[in-house]
Amino acid sequence: GDSVTQMEGPVTLSEEAFLTINCTYTATGYPSLFWYVQYPGEGLQLLLKATKADDKGSNKGFEATYRKETTSFHLEKGSVQVSDSAVYFCALLTGTASKLTFGTGTRLQVTL
Amino acid sequence: NAGVTQTPKFQVLKTGQSMTLQCAQDMNHEYMSWYRQDPGMGLRLIHYSVGAGITDQGEVPNGYNVSRSTTEDFPLRLLSAAPSQTSVYFCASRRLAGSRLGTGELFFGEGSRLTVL
Image 1 (tube, each protein chain N blue to C red):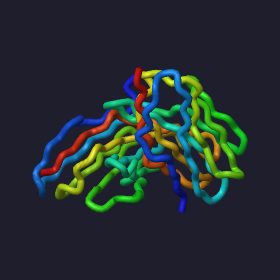
Image 2: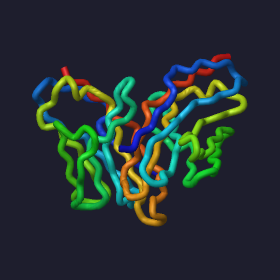
Image 3: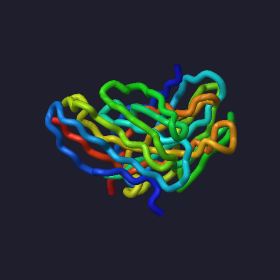
């Protein structure tokens, strides 16, 4: 079945550091890939997405590139801020499925 | 914009009690779903629906019932609560129309924290 594997957290960075959160997937067919973010005490919200190979999703300084050859969708940001502290979830959606498959989430803590 | 509204936000139950978590969305989304979020487990799908009158099981459906009598509402029922159902529950909805994969963007409620003693 479909699955998503994320790097375990927590990830602790200083403000302005470079961020990478790894995500790899297993899926039948050609999935769409997503990153969701969950701020403390809130529900998840979509951060970015990519629907086909080599697409790059971007939003709020975050980027992720859909790499079919390595089945990866790593999240990156060049300079993190304290306000980026949250839990980040990688997810996929395959063609005939109605439901998203989520990774276990990676907690990011950014300090001054 | 209300989006996805869940009630209650917090609830404490005793083992064996029943309750219903309410979920309503005002975006005319066909797809609605319930997830539970537990530490180290990510989000696990409980039940989902692709339209009024249609429901299906997710990964962890045991102990939960759902119904979808209208497009807007998708309540989750716990018939006999157990401590293993202590969790944070999220309702989420999205469009199905449009591209083959729909938009993919799930809109989440703020969550309902349930404790079963």
